[in-house]
Length: 386
Image (tube, rainbow, N blue to C red):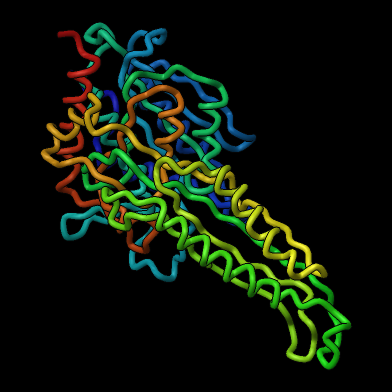
């Protein structure tokens, strides 16, 4: 069959060369439409029906389907189009080109996770619509690295996309069936400034924050005693005191103090329940500091924890194809949102998470063909006519 799209390396080079950084900091945030339009062109060349779903003025999701678009029983192959910001001074190669060295492809997004699209499109390029009993759907989302807005939009629209979903995050081709959630919270204690020579002139926010920090550590200990999952390397929920800022001079009573925390809940722990518990505990402890007030704000909506049964059809199939037992990771993905849409979901893709968000990010070349072969086997199993 005539090749209707570029070769794998050319596709990876084109995608890496199209900058699509997402960030909560508007100084670094960029559109992903360049990547979306490139993927749309390639998918259409393969006979896919392509639809774009705007996330914002400069961001969009892509959904490309080969086969019956009315069927909800096909295979979804999904990834995100954005990368994180980078520090060019730490890179020894051009982040926006692909450098081949030591059996690796170096470049921003080679592992996390633009290359996955090139491998998927190459893998499905050999199929025609008439060969398929169920559709193949390729999804490219926006803003996974910042707000998860792209995946959340899919849920908001209640789209019926397929029965099985593979999200190609870098897992060294190990099927991942569970991950921890992510929530990041800001806690601000407000007091009153005054001269340090007379404590009655003010209300010290740092002293209030001292009580809050002690309560957070107590709460962490209680959570870790209550919840445990041996399937994770760190088998308990974590709570990290990530930053603290307050005060401006030794002889001034501190009127304002903020700490930011990161919580990684296990599957089965609800984000909103954790937020309610956090608020209740802090407000209770601050009753001992009546001159102080507190503001608690979520820095993002968070990512729920994710889990799919080990006995599920997709997990079993991916284990058989890769020869690797399914596992867990501590980082968050779009998997919970696909799960909310009713799909059996597995996280599995080429490259290592250890390379993600790093200078001189690279994809091992020896994982390229195995990824293509696994995708084709999944298509044959779930989509192709018997």
